[in-house]
Image 1 (cartoon, one colour):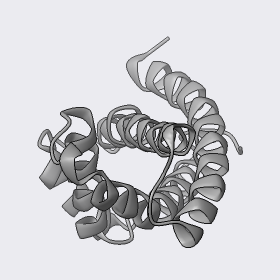
Image 2 (cartoon, rainbow, N blue to C red):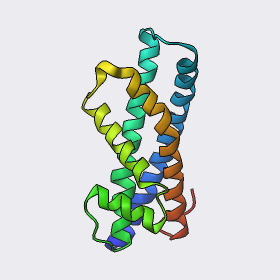
Image 3 (cartoon, one colour):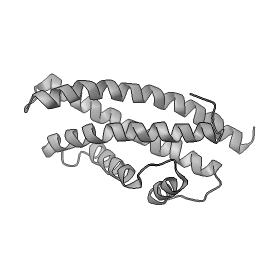
Image 4 (cartoon, rainbow, N blue to C red):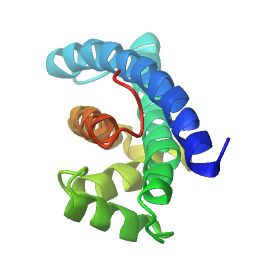
Length: 155
């Protein structure tokens, strides 16, 4: 198997993985949206729901940036190694809607992963609630691009 076919096989596996992760994120989002709209303070179980949402968001953004974005550029034969260059070029090519959104998603993921601003957890929860649907839309867009370019078979 040549390198491109190996990458395409791995991309197909990762798309299956990401579709499952998207569904988990959406379920958490529904639960947390309801809590966010109805309460100002959260008990232990509710905080656990938000932490699960944040964890799923961070994991999904990692899968997106590491297991989808990177291989796309290899298959496109583009020598783009830096994250910022990837998202800017992805926007130019058309499989990223808004590179600034992806940068915000990445920054939030880093804040979650490194526990920055955990004293202000409500701000992080709010940002995750706002950016989760954007992340899902961007994932849908890149998967459609992968299918159109015949890098993977349909979903």
